[in-house]
Length: 123
Figure 1: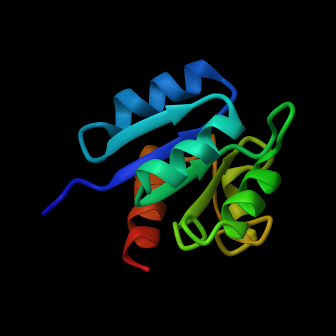
Figure 2 (figure 1 turned 120 degrees about the horizontal axis):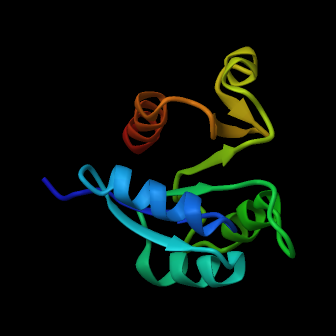
């Protein structure tokens, strides 16, 4: 079985480093701090899932999601928000959705993040 490939987009390099180290035992991780560069990379690499922050300068996660959805090459890639804008309990109240997309709070447990990623990879 091939290792799923994730593209993680976040303007915080520490978040990218942490997620790369923590998730690399389970997934192949690609990271980008620049949302526009991430959109270009997604079109070339076609990751199995995109994990994206919402609150970023210059281009927020909603704009990233919209740009990916407009491109037929990237439109079907599962997209999950990873954000500090909501708490883990708020995500539960929102039934796992943030901004109309599957979402995980940055303060959620790693098990919860992995469960969300895996469920979206199977969808």
